Length: 91
Image 1 (cartoon, rainbow, N blue to C red):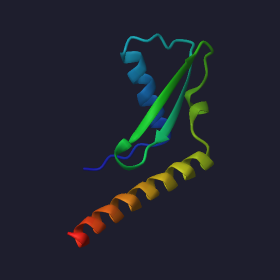
Image 2 (cartoon, rainbow, N blue to C red):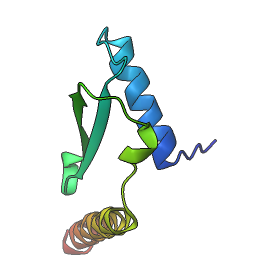
Image 3 (cartoon, rainbow, N blue to C red):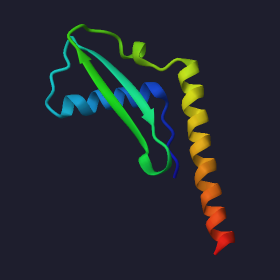
Image 4 (cartoon, one colour):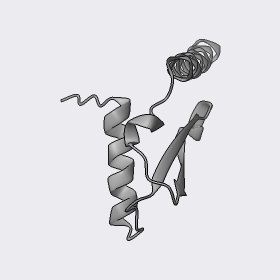
């Protein structure tokens, strides 16, 4: 089974996670920034909580950011595949 979620659903899940941790998010602006690591570092999310309320949809990444993340993911996959192929053929 594959489940694919979009940016709005990811942001909503993060907001729900923060609330479940006991952090009061009522009337707060929540901004989520994603960082895609290379190799085995994975993806991290930095969550900023401000005193001002906002619609979560404002936190969606721009098309440029999505393209940058996609390119980074492709670069990471290429690095992993290249490393795996190199180890297979060099052993």
